[in-house]
Image (cartoon, rainbow, N blue to C red; front, side, top):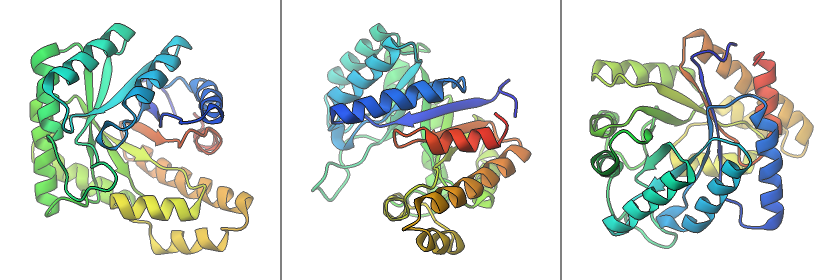
Amino acid sequence: MSAANFHLSFEFFPPATAIGQTNLAKAAETLQRFGPEFFSVTYGAGGSTKTRTKETVAGLISNGCTTVPHLSWGDSPREHLVEQLRDYRELGVSGLVLLRGDAPSGTVAQTGHHAAELVGLVRTDFGDEFEIFVAAYPETHPDAPNPTKDIEFLRAKVDAGADACFTQYFYNPDAYFYFVEECRARRIDVPIIPGVMPITNCERLVRFSRNCGAEIPRWIESKMFEYKDDQESLEDFGCTVVRNLCQRLLDNDCPGFHFYTLNRARATSRILQNLGY
């Protein structure tokens, strides 16, 4: 696999403890060797990790890593968002992952603004100073009324000025291929970069997948739970499954990968090495 004209990025979440910060630093050092376009850092529900997200971004940048923050509007006043964006610009940030964002824990309904509005705000106030990435959902966002409407939401984000999309992770490549075809038919012509989730913990992955609407094929889930008390076998199986998924995506000219690392490098590194990266 050649790195030329191929996007590669790794997603982290802002750690809450000193041990977590150490683990993230080690993961970043390992993954930096693959020459990613950038690392991204998530933004907690309702802006709950606002300070830690900025601190994590600043720390990675100070260590020589190109880093992109996630950002959602939520209920923040417009001027507060503009202030955040100016702060990021001063840190040397040149890209953003813009999301609607999850509701804060304990709330029922989503509040605030859609991601397309946030994209529009950035383009209005900052022009082309930031490269903008948004989310896409090959298996449909769990809050969308239907797949067609979900693609319309994506089209609104692209029309507002998004440069590219990262997808939610998936294990059925046909879902991605069909989704890309549907997007192209609706004149969404920006890169649609597959999100990739390594398989390292069966209970956590099932929980994540139920919350975000990602389907785990039954044969994969059954095998994961067979190995749930054998971490080495689980990681061997997961590496094979995800490596084969990535190879099929490569064979069909996908524009890159965005890995959801969970602040760990081993599984992601192994998959990339097995692909010859």
